[in-house]
Length: 169
Image (cartoon, rainbow, N blue to C red; front, top):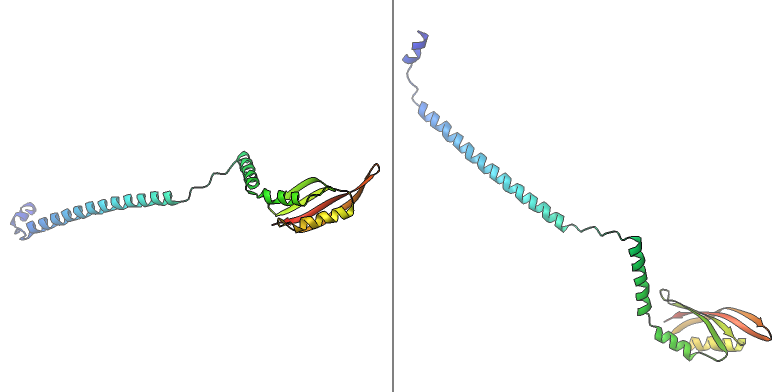
């Protein structure tokens, strides 16, 4: 009897409407899930592009030069400083201050510090002092001074060895 009892119960009135409403909600949820998935995929693509562009904008690390490359760069820098240095005014000033009583043996410029060192021999002290004055008067030099002097005897001849220093202008 219990089985037949359910035939006697009246049918619910809004049963079809409830199934229809449930199906509509399920369809709506499916549509929203599909749209959310598409939005997620689009956002993932945008994030990937942003990451690629950030990576492209990062400065590339400079390659570490080898010891040989550093040596070549140093040589080129030295050669460039030699080429760009204004030698003509220095040589002209030394030539104009030259004397028959002075013999220059060494010319040592320090281009980076703008200094010059001259070593040589003079016949006597007055000739050496005249040479220092002549070099001081040249426009290419400033602060020329006698750094060292020493008498040198070779046979019957006595000369004065000297070292002059000065600033290059």
